[in-house]
Length: 413
Image 1 (spheres, rainbow, N blue to C red):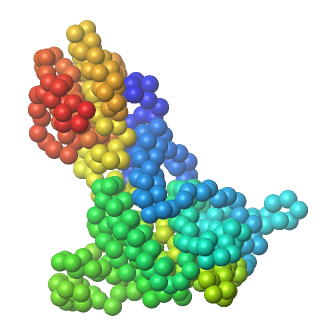
Image 2 (spheres, one colour):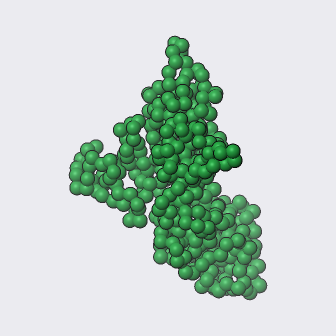
Image 3 (cartoon, one colour):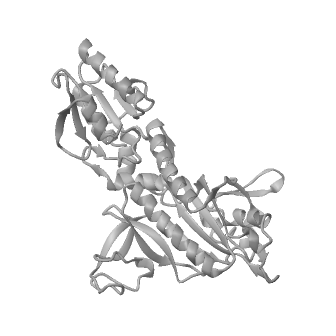
C-alpha cells in the first residue's frame, strides 16, 4: 500500500474529546474516526487490524467445532418477552423502538433469545446434539459511559458462541474446551489474560472472565502471583494479602481490562423457549446451553492500552495492519528507484508492506508517523544507508544495516 494514497491521515495533537489511550492513539494514527460518543468508523488501517483479530477468533472457534452463522441485528420484541429481558435489563441496555404498524423491535446486544428458537427448529433427538454456533457481528448497547474509545461502545464488534448439549457433563466438557480456546486467542493477539472467576448469576456459582492486567483497567481483580488464580472484586472471596486457596501463594490486587467472558447457562433459555430433545430411552429432556463472548473491537482497544509507548502504538505482529513499514528518505532518483524496487520485491514475496512514498513529508514526520502507527518492522532507504537497508523493530531501540536477503530472512520469506 502506498502511504501517499492511504485514506486517513495521522494527527499530531490528541483529540480534545477523548480521554482513553486507545481512543487517542487510534484516532491520531488514522485507524478510526469518531462519529459520536461510542461510535467509530474504522478507516483502512483500523479495519485491517480488526479483521485480523476477527480471523484469529474465527480460527479458534472453528478448531473447537464452532459453525459460523450470521443472525439479524434487528430483533422483534416477542422473543425478548419470553425470556423476560425486554423489560429487565432490556429497558436499560437495549435500543428499543417502534416500526410500522406499531410493531416493536430492539437492536441486538446479545442473541440467546434468537439462537435458542433457531436451534429448536432443527433439534428433536439426542442425535442432533451437541451443536456449537457462533457469529461475528456488530452489536448495540445503550451504554451510559461511552467514553473509553473501543473499550465501551454503543456499537461494537462481537463474537458470540452458543453451545447446546444433552447433559451437564457434556456442557462442562465443552466449557473447558472453550476456555482453552479463549486463552489461545488472547495469546495470539499479544495479550496475557487471567482466567478470572466472576458471578454466574442465577444459573451457576461462577462464570469466567478473561482479564488483562493494566493500570488503565476499569475492573479490579484479586490474583495469585504464583499460579494466577483470580477473582473479580465484585464476587471475591479473597483479597489482597491473602494466601492463595489453590497454591498458597500471595494474592495481589490489580486493575484489569475484561476482554472476554464465558457462561454456563444450563436451562436458563432453553426452558422459556421449550428447547427439548428426546434421549436414547425416549424421554424428553431440556437442552443444556453455554455462551461464550469476545469483543474483537474491545480486544483491539485493549491491545493498544497494553502495547504502546510515548511515541505511539506497538502492534503485535499477529494483528498489525502491515508486516513492514518501508520509508523512503529523500527524493534522489537512486534512493527512489531502490525503494520502489524493494517495495515490489517484498510484495512479490507475499509481504504486506506500507510504503511511505510521500514526497512532501519530511524525514522527521515519516519517522514520527511510523512510530505512531506502530507497524512491527521499519525499513529505511536513504543515501545514508548506502546499498544497505536501515532496519528497526518498533519494540526495540536498536537499528541495524541489512541486505534485502537478510531482511527477508527475519520476516520468514
